[in-house]
Image (cartoon, rainbow, N blue to C red; front, side, top):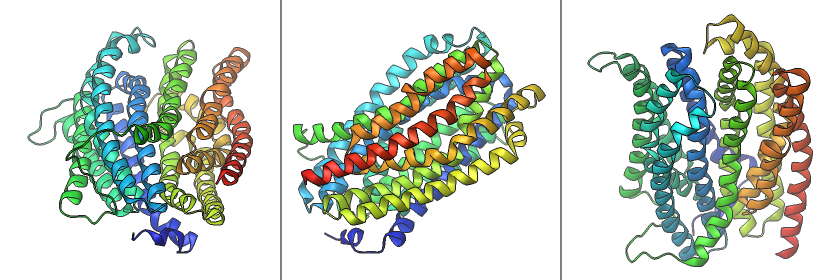
Length: 448
């Protein structure tokens, strides 16, 4: 086994080595989210509203495929730390096949539900038509997304962060280039409008998967091998993958439920508030995706060291992750307090919408810094294979606290109450996160 450096090198050096490529990738991914929405906003405000309404279902697709990928990542890292090569290989092969099946189911299911889903939030036929056009194309690529993300988590589990960075950068840059070309019909390409935005997204995902396949089949030296020859599902391995993957899926899917619930509340005031919420979730990717990059670099490290019984290093890895996440969140808070109007102005020219959005960003950003504790704790628990405690943190952030708070505060203060629900929830969730992380790790150490 050549992975012993994960329990031997200094923590800070390891964290930078593992996380920096992922942070760069996530920042480019964030840029793609912003650029994609920016160009769609140039089509019309209805197109941007349609994109905002489709976003929760897109997030659901990502939640299922990434969440299960986290299970793949954690199981591989644990077995490598425990020096069990055979089980690490089995986790990679079974995880890849299962995620591909998830992609097939998601393609059919998401396309089927979209007409009814969109009508839950709007009666505007133009918005519905644009939403269906975009979603039918985007969801056709779900199996590509699933395979790409399975490979991503396999490469990350063995510390090949540079490969993940290359694959993600290739897809995002491709998407950024193709967006204006296909939306507005530059050069020999026809003007496709919102269909072009969807196709650009899908083609970027195809390129990401292609990069992983080239690296793998050209002989990338991985500590795990994926063999489908004589493949059969192993019940114990499937249970382990889903035992970590399902809570991670629910973790990532909860924002979809939250956005849909908040859209229902805000739609009662004005469509402009729905647009603002959609823009906020695009902008916040500049914070939470880089923070997620830190977490992705941390997961294999903390999982490997936990499997190897290095509990002191586990604590150090967690503390370092928390510090990095806090720095990112502090930077985001400063930006949203100082430049909320210009940030909203990237997506709309309506003065009233910009004013509503600027107020929302100032209020919501109060909760960014405390959320670093929830992000670091939840990610660390996933890396340790403790999916249920991680899920409990996300339930507090995305369901148990914020939805009732948003509903009650909106009745008392109007739509602004929804924005206040964000920071109130993050403060309470931060305290709970620290408690549940310390309790879970302490109990796990006793059992081992």
